[in-house]
Image: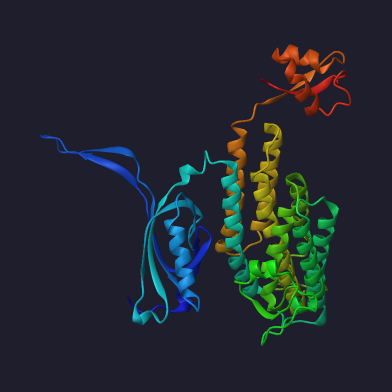
Length: 458
């Protein structure tokens, strides 16, 4: 094996466990049984169906904790059942791992080469219990943290522009933290301790917003005197840009680079969703999925810049400055990160929601697809978009699967108000259906059903 340069590797993951890839290949095709007959010049190729799709991957793990990374990847490959494989130049796929081979060579300079083979298992996504979708979207959410952190770090600029660039970014980060704190206080919590951690972390991010907007790239900076809970550090500690600088009896204060805000955004949104009842979580996360969606886009500013291909007779007064472009770029990055994590967590909440009827399920599915489309169109490279779309696809599959089990709903129009007992007997010949019928239509009294109401077809 020849030497491998770190710059040549791109991130990938299986079962949420990250590794890096230089080479991967997919095998596709049909199972053709070739029949050759005596005294015939032309054979008959009989199509026996599609071949199993296989993926051969040469991955690498490296770094100070390379043994732990190797063990995590081996454990993921040894685990039973299908899970998601995210390769650099492919959409996420449900696969099973056929085998993994780990080798260490002297010319790889501290890297382990992991040769893996996977077989597609997409047909297993239907028929899974709803709880499985929750876990798979959770895996996609965690996998996206490293990808979105890199995306943010690569595009963010804290060194160019007039003072208002930093001020605007500070305000965006502070507004997000304020929204989180407001949402925690707006809904009843399922876990008071978790809600307290979320609120405390939101306060910390709010107080340190200026440092996130313009960090010292030479050395880490202490966020603020208020320590972040240890549970937060356990969640974000392995992500890029987070460095522990102090410990005390109540928690840990962390250091920060610009991209350190990304895992903290993921923590706040993820734990906010976990602390709320499903319907409340969907409402709160939908709010965050539209966070500053109306901000001025970079593309709209660039369209105002004169070009030799677009000669101008008069110089317009609204030509954007370099600071304007930087401000719009930084704003798009941060607001896009917030929306992306909110969308993935929203997909998880919708995938695990129990819908009352098909109409409700169809509407939820359409809403989540539309919200994802708005954000994904803003990404400029496939790896980032695919990381977010994995959650959308799983949510759509989960809702579609649930729709297959839902009884269609019809609208009844009656000449006069009648008791729910009457309608239960008339529609189903089952008096025990009277109470569910009244509950479905939120009637004040089961003795007086409205003249127009909903009912299941069977």
